[in-house]
Amino acid sequence: MALRGLYIMKFAISQKDLTDTLYLVSSAVPNKPHHPILNNILLIADKQEQHILVTAFDFSLGIRVQCKSKIEIEGKVALPAKLFTQVISSLPKQEITLEIVDNAAIITHSSGKCRIQTVNPQEFPSLPEIEGKNITLPAIKLLQALEATLFAASHDENKQVLAGVHFQFTKSSWEAAATDGHRLAVASGTIEIDKQLTENAQSEAGLDAVEITIPQQTLTELQKILGTVGDNSECTISITNGIAVFTLPNIQITTRLLEGDYPKYSSLIPQQFQYQFTIDRKLFDNAIKRVGIVADQRNKIVKITCDYKHQQATLSTDSSDIGGAVESLNIKPQGDYQQKLVIAFNIKYVDQALKFIPTNEVLINVNQPTTPVIITPVDGILNQLILVMPVELIGNSEVIADVDVAADEDVMEETVNEENSELAANPSLPKTVGKTMVNPIPPANSTPKARGRKKKVAAA
Image (cartoon, rainbow, N blue to C red; front, side, top):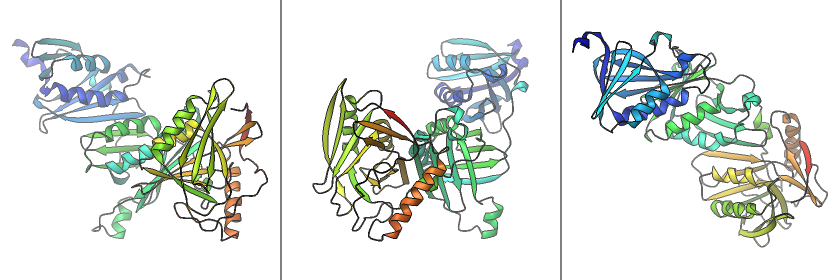
């Protein structure tokens, strides 16, 4: 009892609540920190609010979580993140008490005590203060946007700005896009503005057009957190000076933004199509997976033959080393097509596209066997599209149209513009994405010229 006068912090908290909180912030603790203090978490006890704030920060990503507790003596302390998390998660799921005495954290639980040395909290870096533009979105919409795009972001940090998701915000809408140079995913939606705000007030509130690119690591953690909050929760995004802060109920995520100009991807998306058909997403996905088992393991190519007359798509793979497979699925053509369409894809890219579209059916939009293919949901809640580059089949070999969105933007734009000009010149060709095409003209018999960089590989 003689030590009571030396207490600088003391509180009681649920073991489960503290464990869950530490799990959330641990993602911001670096594996190889630039400074030893970053191996720690900062814990602040607020007696007036009766909660603790737990923070981890590696100068690029910061996570702060608020957790209800019974504060007897307020204060702050820094604790080794990994050790503290292991200790707390191993304790009985009952109320525990934490008190700081002589630079040590004494953790008392139902069957004993544990002592951990603390670190000077003054050394812990402060999270940046944000006073900039604010955008508020329903948490569920932001989660759907990440689910629809994050998978397509590059995992290669050397690709810099492509290693994230690009967001564009206006006063009334938002759009998210991600690409790794081989496929492109885009999702968009509207922003509901308080009707009581006048037009001047909206401008003062910082609702002008904003473009930012957020690192993949940050969004991966944000996606996990968004999945735990209520459906009616909102997320406020504050942006200023290369930093963004995501504020959710009891949780704040701070991140540095990626620098550099994001590719003008909108010019890569065809607006009209010669061929459109719908197909059952799950049946298509399962068939892709099955034929992929016996596909050439190096290239993983599937050939799809669309027979519009019989409303059937045939998927086939053939490998001299492994074997081959053939499967047929029903399709619903969106026009009176006479010719068959033969097109090939990298199985990985089509499989992932189907995985991250939530609807029962998808619409496949095609112009030529070597130009961008757009996959969209049918009757989806979210405006979403995924662009996948096909593989060109020439004789007994394949040429992969390896289109780097960043490097080949001009080439792709030229391709799409040529297609749109040709299609627009003939009004009997197509309508826009998601609409039924009337009186399409079959493609020319000549072999189309593939765009983008190519590399020749052995036939599947």
